[in-house]
Image (cartoon, rainbow, N blue to C red; front, side):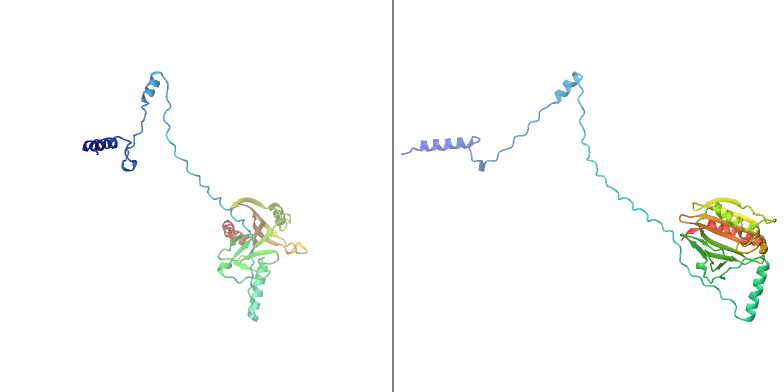
Length: 278
């Protein structure tokens, strides 16, 4: 028979064991984490300072460099094409009536007496936006009071000036010769008073960064296609330019009675200065 005193002693012993850490069930007791221990090393810095040892400064964290963004290379500009325009020209129709034909004949005789130039293929029918000359990607607008003519032979354009002092022509041609060779060619059709060859006055300039050579001559005009020099026209003048373009040279020649040429040199030079790409 178990005594009551023994039962009480057993209960007290179990309670004491449960109160001891580690003796209880882990599922019913939550343990508190032990804080981490950080050693104080500041005394090492003081010791190094006393002994004259320099401690390296703490390095700051450097930000990571941003990745370089490669910019796309610019696309090369397309190569310029210096082309000629294909143009069709329509000539003005002459008079059909007897009176009209007689009038035109009188005009032609008067022009011959004035040593005027005559467009071989006649004047051209054009609208205002068609009154220009174009070659090799460049163009020259016609001055207001000039006329467009139908180009003849190897000319890519032709203009005409009607003037009471005598009519003059402006011929546009593409050339392969040098400016000096073209100078000699022009000098061969203008002679002085004693039928000797004249010498051209030469000046140079640049237009749109292209070399322009200007040639001026005056004297008696001799048609190179004539069989003799009896048809020479006195008091003639030539004002011409040779423009050295990327793909060709262009000769633009104003020629006719000297008074008419000299009156129109300003308009001619302005047309050259205002050259543009087309």
